[in-house]
Length: 89
Image (cartoon, rainbow, N blue to C red; front, side, top):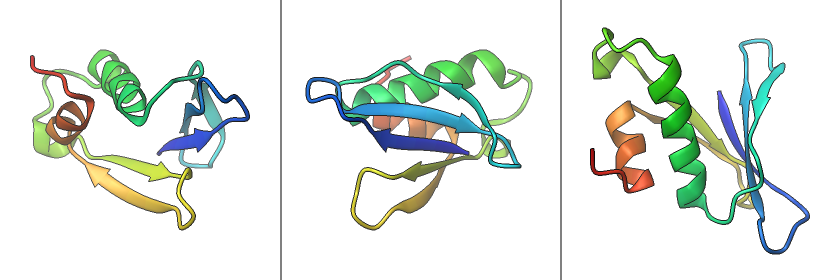
């Protein structure tokens, strides 16, 4: 699962944390300025680590947004992440 969290920094208020199935933190990102930058980070990581021979329908990504008062979990495919990140290719 991917978790978008808020930080104490005013200029860079977001970070992305990647967790395993046992909720252990695998990777944390650097501090990011916007949620769009968070989705670009998620897209870049999955572009590098998800095998390219899998079809787009098999690569579901669950993203939990902890920056809002009521955290929600959204499930995106890789094309949904690309759209949120504003990536054209």
